[in-house]
Image 1 (cartoon, rainbow, N blue to C red):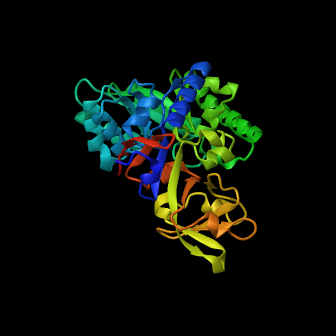
Image 2 (image 1 turned 60 degrees about the horizontal axis):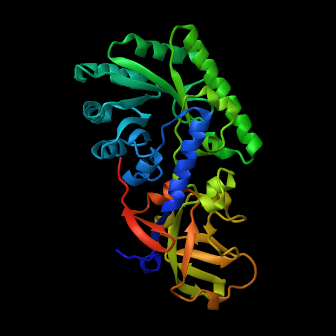
Image 3 (image 1 turned 180 degrees about the horizontal axis):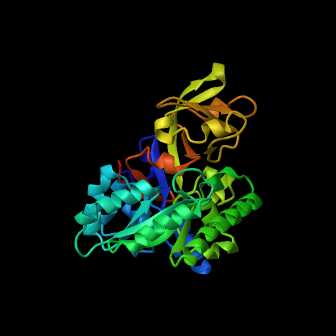
Length: 374
C-alpha cells in the first residue's frame, strides 16, 4: 500500500481520519448536550471503521439504509440496528435471518402494506422474538411514510402493532429531507419547527388513545444545528456529518475545513483551444450530484486551493476544468499535476469507490472498504 497520497493511483477517494473523528465526536457531544440518543446513519460511508467512530466505540444503536448494510454490520459485531427502508415481502427472509442473529433489529413500516407483510410472517418468527416496528412519518418531505396530515391512519397502524403479542411499537421516525431545499438558517429553523409541530400532533393523538412511544428525527442539516424544539425527540439519526461535503457547507451545516473527504485526480491533457484542462475524474469517480442544480453559474464542487478553477462537465472517466476568469496558465498545471476535489454530495461520491484511502496529513495510514449492494 502506498504510504504517501502522492503515490496513489487516480482517481481515488481520500478520507481525513482526524476530521472524521472530530465530526463524529462533535455529533456525540451535540446529542449529549440536547439529551437525546444518537442513532447514527451509516449510509454515507458503509464501513466498519467509521461506524465504530460514530458509535463512540460501542458498536450499538445504528441506522442503515440497506439490508446489505444490516447484514454486514451484524457480521462485524454490531447490534441494535434500525433498517431505515420500508419493509417489503421480497426481502422478508433476510429480515427473519437478522431477527434471529441480532438482539435488536428494528423494522421500518411506511404504510399498511408493510404491516400486513409483518403480520403474515409472524408464524415464521422464533418463539423468543417479536417484530420491533418503527412507523415512518412524512411531515412534508413527500417521500415515504404515513402522512402526518392523517393521524387517524397512523393511530390505526400503531394500535394494530400494540395489540399484537408478536409486534412491539419501538418509535415514530421522520426524516427532515426537505431541510436540503432551503437556503438560509432562519428558513431551516422554521422548517424544523413546522415539522416538529406535525409530529407532535401525531404523537399527542396516539397518546390520547393510550398509545405511547418515542420519536426520532434525522438529517444532517437539522442535527448539526438543532433548535431547542428538537428536545421533543428522543433520538437523532444523521449520517452525512461523518464526511460532510460541499452541499453541507453551502447549507451552513459545517465549515469547509470540516469536509473530511476528497477525490484526488490528475491532469491528463491540455485543451488550449477551449481554455481547458482535462483530468482523470469523470462521473464514475465523483457522481453527477450537484451538477445540474449548480451549473453553469456556480460551482458544484470545490477544487481545493484553486479558487479560479471550475469543473464544468464530466464524461464517464474524464472531467473538464476551466478558469472562472481569464486564461489558464498551463505552466501551473502540467500533465500529471494532482488536484483535490471536495464533492457536492459525499454519500453519492463515496459509493463510486471500492476503497477509501485514509490519511493523516499526507501519510496514508490505512484503507477502509465499504459494503456494496442492497
